[in-house]
Length: 345
Image 1: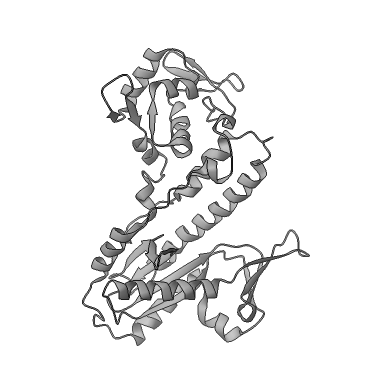
Image 2 (image 1 turned 45 degrees about the vertical axis):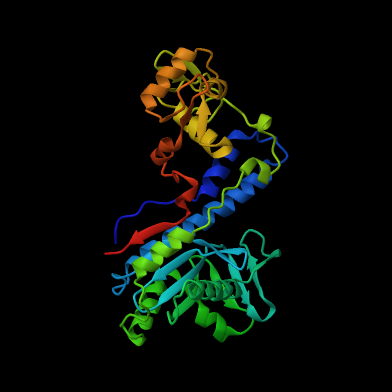
């Protein structure tokens, strides 16, 4: 399997930036912190599944599509992980939840009980029903694209190895559809052993993946509007990479933290990346002066030259593109990075 690094979703990057730039005393801060924790857990679960998939001996011809969002009958549906084989596909809905997970398909619910509060039950969307719906939607989408007779399977992948899985109802159904990450290789190998290996459709996995890419619907969320936060409430200044305090002071060729005395040459990079996720990927010199707390325009121009940012426009109203900085932080470089392909060889 090609070596893969941990991939953060755009939503996690936006929540990270908002969490850093919002005062802990803000009334929305606990909500942001909670949503960020959920997103980190979800992204970790989706990434961890890749390791176990790579252990399958029969996955050499598979293309994995991450986070595809497609339109069907004027409504969008999104899939966590889609495995495209020549003769079949597998759709995975990953769940990285802690504690005891009580699957109750007869009542369309999943009950989570965390170790830290055994008397509190959390009702969540029933994932078996969820993945079945996604499976049916994807099959209908394929048919709308003229792809018929492409068989598929769907499962719920429990990625937290410390979670306890139990069935409150219909244990046979739970056993059929719920699988822990290490057992995925066994599932895939069993399916391949029972599946005819000839191509079941005239389209190859690569052709289907390209078709998905073409129809992938971007979802660009304005994170400030999503949580009803005024832009003026966002804290500016360069955060210290050592103690995380705001704001570092600019000195010739370096930044200095008045709190812990740490010095850095490029601490401003993370501030610009945060700006790109909160306000957009283009920034003016005036805005850059404001968020970095710099009064010297010449100093900002020198920074722009060192960062080698693409310039948009030729007048004094020119703006500079921040997307290249995101790649340095293993963050999606654009809103179109939802679809992530891993070619297994």
